[in-house]
Image (cartoon, chains in turn orange, yellow):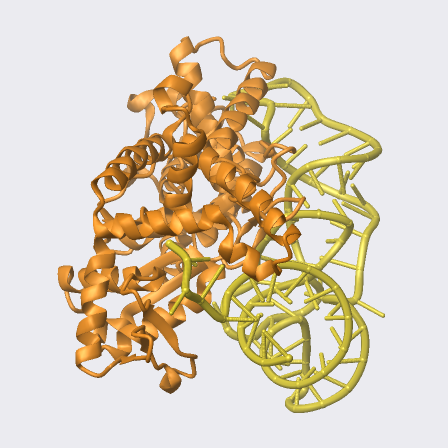
Length: 463
RNA sequence: GCACCCGUAGCUCAACUGGAUAGAGCAUCUGACUACGGAUCAGAAGGUUUGGAGUUCGAAUCUCUACGGGUGCACCA
């Protein structure tokens, strides 16, 4: 998740020790659905045999399950059942639920299937993370933490923080937080989604110092879920509950409407990257900027530009807002975009290359003082933006907002481009002015590079 | 039904957290020297900040209300 990753870098830049954790939902009915569908209709298909990425293959069977499930619901309704009854009594869903029970009971056959299919998914995710350039320090697997969660809940029950209903299910009364009651364990003792989150949270509380902050970067459809979770943690007496924060972000929307994984109408990250790479390639070739590149360098460059465009596009908008994304109109490369900023950087490097390290003025030999009329307006404004950088990093950290950085670095690049356009650098005769402008350019490039790094975006030396 | 979020140029987004004439990009139109790299730069046009009421010296920003959109209120994850 790009937002979380960038926020982590920004917090790190603000002097915090950051541990990037990924919580993997590798347990539950949704996995069982895929497993069941694969058993029934998969004919032994594997990522190797089909050439599909592991996560895509498993996703395919999730969709497959839903298709058959819907058909069964329709059949049940034809037999006179109501909508709800049909959804609950369709044979497929009953079978999936049975599979979940067997999984929790440790049935070797089910567990074996789960292990293989899960490994396919992990492998697929790893590939995608690598392409996106994200990595985690710490992984939490729901398949492990739900057990811890169960223990915590049972312990909480003993300490009268929770209560049991007549059917044996365990609940939290959250009236003091003005929230409704919340089920924590089903009557049959199996756990629900939030049980696992309780387990993960308490595990993390144990692992990290008491004054740590825990930031959950999760979509805003789970706002309520986290309110409930934090309330429960507080009820259990964890002081760290006050340091838990849900960094909630708006969903990416397609013009046709919401993305739905069940119907397979998600924009897949891999497809998106592929498409961006090919637009970057086209644009580069059209502009004829590749003469000096080896094929490998060119491929690398396309990737850098594509990822720059993609990440910038996502991170420049305030995370709280939902944004509209039309995958058919591929992301622009002109204007307020990642490549615009990358281009500015590459252009500065071109100048610096011409001067060479020997020609660069030492920082102490440059007169940074703004002495009246000898300094152009444009130079002043670039200098002002450079000067603002540390404050911007701080602000971005305080608001958990990469968008602040993105908008800043765009403005910096824009002002530099104006300066670049209006003022001579290499051709300037006055040595003091020339040195000043070189140093200003050098500094601008550094800030661009650093700011982009906070967004997880690389900048190319030429493009 | 109840709760939360959102509504700014045709489109995608800004606006230092209540401050002066609401700013950018895309798209449209016009232009740029001997091009330190034109993925650039300059200009034009585009707004009653969804409507209405209120608080304030001052409101896109706070309150209320209407309308429009989204999400949640699962023994799904």
